[in-house]
Image (spheres, rainbow, N blue to C red):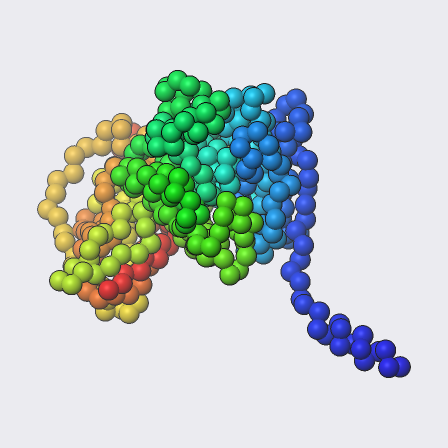
Length: 444
């Protein structure tokens, strides 16, 4: 009888554990079946439409395994992600080009099979440590690898490379001297052309849909510090969001081992980065096969001392045909008659509105006003949208929004299309589709 109270105390004191992930191991992502071209999937038993993280192990391009994931699978699943750990083939059996091709094939597998494991094929993030960080950064900047798999770079919503020193290989060899040259020239080749081709920096450019980057490195490791900041600067110069986080009190091994721990600063930065990227890319509901997505280049800005918003948030509207047949799209008089934007501010008086009408004459429609969007394709209007700024109101007017005090601003757009009297407009898409809501914070 004395044992029972003790047992009761032990039961009550036991921690409440989160559900363990459901694991599918050894899934081949390429043919013929090869142990080095397999991946493992970790997901909650009831997962549905969750973002997917693809993790690439380190090992100097010569070693490592997908099983080396520490606490990451549980941490990501607990946060509502599907976690995928992948292998790739090694040097010298294959080149770095073929290794990166393996990663692209793994991404294609994730895109094609995510739903089977409760994942969202439209929300894929790529991460890796050490050599895996290099492969992650390369596949997320050099769009040739995903194009070879029939995929656009835009399917990647974010990239998190962890502590690698070869974003710019020629620069690394120059800065590192003889030791670096001897080490890396074997892997990347001795010719400058091949070294540049394997350098993520060399592929950074505007207009490629390169995803935002969170670049983590050990604070007191000079070579990764220099390369991380150099890479981030190149990304920013191309208009791509990039943040560098230096991990204090870690080394090359522990920065990886600690990722996923709640008290780890790089982990906290990672959760914030992922959350922000997901807020930017959520899409609105599908109406008659058409979906409208509103994205932003950042989620917050500031009011300067003179009371003006320091830098406007650039907005982008993307129309996507998610049906199985072509949609004839009505872009006639697009800015004035098809699109309406609106803003809800908290507090309500944080924004000032001014409506501007236009005295305009409508030109007759031309064929280009009624183009088709094929199944799976997207289109974005070329007109610039920004907040604060002017939004069309689809009644022959525009509304200018001016921020007058700090606050939270919820921005949304809608597109309307109805039948019009023109032979060019036969069988056009009709209805109204609403975008997702983007929340922008303006601080002092």
